[in-house]
Image (tube, rainbow, N blue to C red; front, side, top):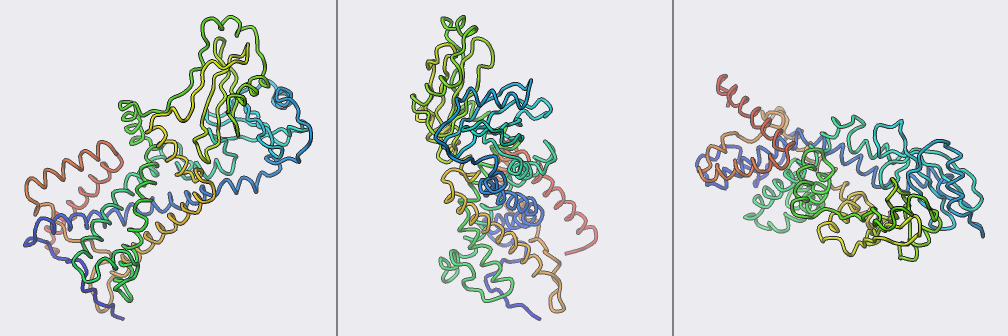
Length: 461
């Protein structure tokens, strides 16, 4: 069975007679090939686990309804009494924070430190019915979002494959390469269609201009990638903020540019220190003060960490983090000593907060989840079609092409000296800022050079 010839397919000969763009394009094609073959599996894992994570709020509500939801009642126990009941459930445990019930159908969460866990992000959480004081269950929760066990498991699967810090390299590898592969694909797709009749249509409509075979796969692959490009760049950029090496560089940059997220000061004024060490107005008074200061919705109340420090009350609803206010409250008088409003955040801190919430699928609730799901579905389609094109180039009785043969090497040598210097400088810059990209790119180039040397030794084409 023969395949339809694609009259607009890329040249498979070295661009010795071509211009500088032809040489640069062939170099991008070769790198795009290597990245597509070797990086795609890591992106695939990140995409599938990310899709699962997007829907974890609904998964939590289904799995843990008995701990999260209660029957509404006309009476509510004082928050201090709920805390006392939780402490009796875990005697001797150190109280870490309290998340009071927000509505009459919510349970109260009382969080305790988990010394048995090496990761301080884990807490032992007691769920209490705020109406009758019944203990609904005790579970470990994870992170500032208070993720329950199923969500925490999926989160760590997405982050590090449950392999600890070593496993984080996989997700950093995927995030570091995704933007590069996406932008490289954009350049190739636009250059392929810019001089073709009906090029604009072919750019945007999957399958346009190709009826079957590899040309159609390429058309759907390229056009779909173009539609989801902005989303892929967003996922890559926000994903790298959590990464081990690139994330550290991003953190350093934010520090230098004063783009860090501010925090409220919990240090008490000297005049209040002596009183604070001997008196405590109680968690009920502290919560009432926070509500009067417009810290509404879900909040977390953190007791003083040490003598001379205050209670910290902060809003924890990430569905639209304009309500991410926090306040420090004097334990002796239950008066506010410092307050920080989200409106006072630097612009970049706000963008960071919004970006992280959107990456997690929390910013706009269900619409955010649907958009991310569509984006991931498009990404999975692009990955599948990339491998399908690779398979469609396999040897057949009528074609002697190697399986997924990369585009001819030697393009870099065809570039002018200034352009070669520019390419090396750009790659070095990105290699320093995004180490996983830099190291793997060097590995790809080294392997490619080795294969080229071997081909010359054996007389291969």
